Amino acid sequence: MTHRPALPRPAPRLAGRGGLLRRGATALCLLLAGTLGAGLSTGMAPDAAWAEGRVLTPDEMRATAGQMLAIGQDQVAYDMASALLKRDPDDVQALLLHSRAARNLGQTREAKADARRVLKLASQDPAQEAALRHAASMAMAQALSTEGRRTWGQLWLRRAAQEAPDADARALAVRDFQYLRSRNRWSTSLRFSIAPHSNINNGSVNNAVELYGLPFEVALPGAAQALSGVELSLGITTRYRVSESRRHATDLYLQADTHQYELSAEAKDLAPDAKGSDYATNVLFIGALHRMMPGTGRVEYRLGGAVGASTYGGDHYANFLRGNLGAKIALTRGTALTVGVQADRTTGPRAPHATAWRLNGGLSHRLSGGSVIGATVNLTESRSTIDVADYSEVRVGVSFAPDGLWFGAEPQLGLDWRWRDYDVSAYAPGEGRQDEAYDLYADFTFRKIDYFGFNPSVTFRSAQQWSSVDLFDIDRMGVQIGIRTAY
Image (cartoon, rainbow, N blue to C red; front, side, top):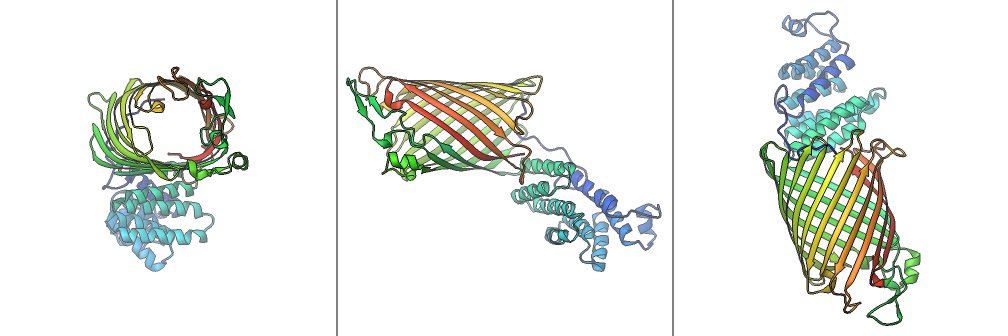
């Protein structure tokens, strides 16, 4: 993947007065003047015609007001649009011009009222309805941005992109959205997925296992075996940018995730006393992240920390304390290397207390044809007085994102392999325990299906674990359906 610096850089100075992408707004004014208006029929320059006091037709006034906006004569444009609205309060072109001029003059309440009026009137002109809704949504976003309400402005820009009459109009709304997001101290992302799973409780694939070195198998109760069902996952991450410059950014963030389950009929027959809520989890993290990009900007350093807590089955399960340090290095234009170290301390009323150190590294490279390949390596040492949390682990992953679409979707394929060694296991006295696992997935994002800037996604996943202790032989298969942001 082509490396781009993760820290936001100051936006280029835009023409005209301050605000949200004046070049886009100027293009909108010219569109109104050239497309919705008839233009100047006399060929006289608009400023000359205005200076001579010549009476302009409504079409000429619309065109002139648009050109006044384009050259920064906001008060003139405002007065001309006001005159048009006295003649016809439902003149949608005049409303849009008036909204833009009012916004430039700091009269954002008027600007928003004009935009709402256009949205109400748009349905009366089927031929121009999409263009009018798009233009009104852009005007609303610009007014909100001027008020400093950038998050609401982003929502209106999503609407503008959804209502866009053509690809160019949509691209303008997306560009404005990305610009506004880069200037917004608040940023929020949502996650949602629904996934049928063959094993929601990480139960054993076996119904009888050898334990404690006994020369015979022990039958497992239904709740200890794999139970199928459906997982509903919801998540939110919101961050606030405390400080920012060309070379650094500091964020405070909150992340919350919930995973809820519904057992299948087969699982209820296997474990009549079990309920989906028995396996529900909730996790909350609050943290800070500082990023620095000194020198040439080819290396980004990250320093972060977080505290968190989780519940399992409705009860408080664990508390977390986390710290991490890492770097992302642009080796070449299409190659990036990431390295890092993370320390975790887990406590809590039900979780095994443990301290874990993790070393991680990753490499991504964009091929000449546009496809992206990646590889990751993670080493973990977890130490605890409880055997299930006292282990060493090696994890290796590879991924491939082909250029182009498969079945109308943007694909990504991946395989993760893991080896975990427990020095001690209560189920195998004197022998310890060793697990080997893989996770194979194929992920598809349907970019051609877009609703308010979100695309549906489907992930097919197959995971299996082989253990020296039969109880921990695990097999999971699932299909995850979710949504992702398009920009």
